[in-house]
Length: 94
Image 1 (tube, rainbow, N blue to C red):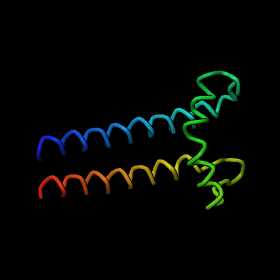
Image 2: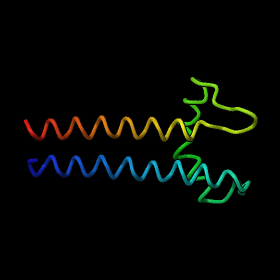
Image 3: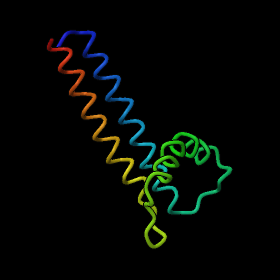
């Protein structure tokens, strides 16, 4: 893999890993009924709600009071991440 492509690959991988961590943190924190005005809760909401809200509009993912949208988003993020990283690796190989 050529050196510039390594940096692109690593940057894309890191961006997805950070966002995946934010989605997991948002899901875990929602279980404890956090203070909606806490700065960390507000940050997690602002970072993850745009994608989660779109997903909730597209697919009804609430069953018995359990919201499965974060799980579906995590699955989608892993799939897109793998596709992008494979595409970057193919471009790097020529």
